[in-house]
Image 1 (cartoon, one colour):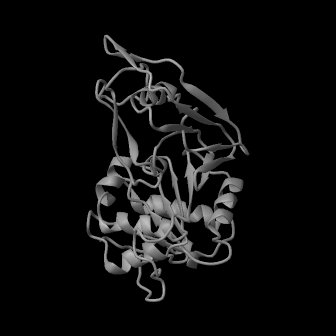
Image 2 (image 1 turned 135 degrees about the vertical axis):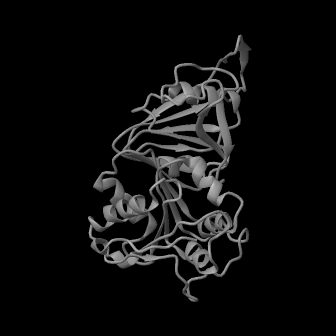
Length: 290
């Protein structure tokens, strides 16, 4: 595990540390999933959206937040800006820890901090990089345990993509050169990998309207008919509690389903009939179940 202090401007926000009183009383898998998810589509995070996150997590009254910049190629910088956005809203630096580590290298004290955090915040970057460090490790189990015990798990951009059990990696099998321009709706093109599994039977896409990712999500919906496919725009979030979600922020959320499982493949192209599409605005709520 690599640990280094943030610059003094954030008043030495602490890292994954030990505190014997912080470990929750329920073992992993035993407690009900009583936490919430705050899934941000990337881009700028307006003050009002962050205030919603603080209120959702109850961070204004008690507890601490743990920043996981594992998706970023510059974790110190990612953690600094993630914490600074909350300091700018008046929260004290003592409420924040940051932690980054290699696969299976998180210390017992770090695992205690994960389990005890009121808010776990996942920064942007590369969702594959995040899952390489976390997937299937004790840290993964600790995140799930924190959620089961009432923590809010928040993520932006790549940190949003990892929330679901089936995760869009950002890669295309048929077009491996990354352009960010999803010009086709093709069969067996969009790579799906294992995510954190905080959201079951849902697949999350981000930067959705801004980066015109509808083609990608249509292909995913056609190939994964049992999933609710959710495209979240920048400066926008969905707040998940139980089996429902509500839109917060400034933009739109697209919800796409293929309830009949319709699918037809011809010359590498994929098609289908009867897809259900909703375009939701801030304040709108929807069910996560088909």
